Length: 187
Image (cartoon, rainbow, N blue to C red; front, side):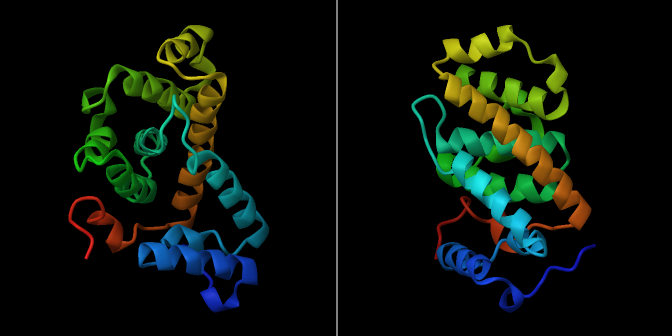
């Protein structure tokens, strides 16, 4: 719906980051270009993304973080984020089935009780945040999540609610490469 700008036309810092991602992944994820027509917002979005998604704590692994994105994006019917973050979740969880299960019905997925509690809160924040209460957060504490971890669950849910809506607005489709990532050995 919105035409993505050519990489060559972008500010140097955006081009640099996109080239880094392309070198690591072997392709440019469509979201990097879909949001690039607004460079200041692109910078803010990816800075917040990186602050939330590129860390791991004892209570919230990088795989858990990706599963939050998959579950909340599925609830928001965001094809791009389910497919793209499903691929990353398969790799980080080292489980080729879990992302598909979470995208279809996280309540029946191969998850432990801690992960299920995380997704319960994450999905609630994504679609009915006014229903979150201290009892639900206490469940996360009992599963070993720190206050910072719990904040991250909420912040990831909120950031990807934004992302899901921008992807819908822009009409961004998943890259073909995402579909096989974490399912077949990388060549």
